[in-house]
Length: 370
Image (cartoon, rainbow, N blue to C red; front, side, top):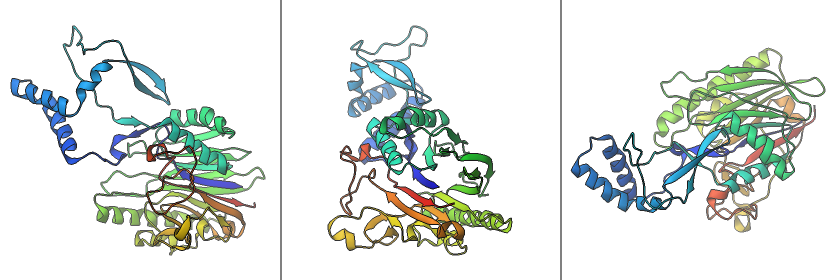
């Protein structure tokens, strides 16, 4: 049985709130001011200021593509510019002349291809994906993108929308005779902050054995780390309770996979990593990964997967002791992760910039004998 977890950071389009802003302060302030003025009543002073802001934000360049054609892709409607006119025109009924701000931003098609390359290279029987925007995107990626890279489509794919509302859903894909028996949804947080639920799957192997797989996405907030820490620690504790209850029921083949959004030394993960007998696949002697180049090959960054693999760990594949003893080989694929200066590692030759990277997360996998 080969199982993998991979945070793809969306397949075709990503919520703009999740994209790190790289704009200068002036541009950010102009955009906020522009949005604010649009909501106010129309007057000469506001209109004049909007025209000034339009010039400063280079909106005048959009005059080359005033009309749009809508087409369906990956379960969403996308806009494609058409060179039909040199000036903007309003409709007779609305007399409206303007633009609409969309909530999601398309992902570079090369990045989508690189996501498929990572999955194709790992080629698991059971695949857990994090941060998938919707089921239609998942199906299009599974049926049309993966086969382009010599990866057989997964006959079974499942996605249950979470309550967070930012297009970061968890998905499960199965092939080679592995079948889903049941799904349970656990609410693992009672705070006022909207978080993601925990998904518990029972999977039957081709030989009739049962695997209990828990997919978890723990809370992260870069702007309020103290609150994030408390929420995540409570979530980790709730996950540990579910794990121990499965053990009390006599279940032995248990996997906890997903993005925990904290390195292993963070005390918010103590309930999972220290207060249970779960084993991290990264600690297996079979764990194989291409090392950093040069001096970084002998460097051990705090919170990294291991020496010479100096990216901070956020993604985990935890196994019950019985499964861990049966690990035959395991590893990490980070060929789709764009390295920021140092450390350095080998990436796909077709990745030329950060926008073309598959994800900021590696794919983690393990093969067990059952």
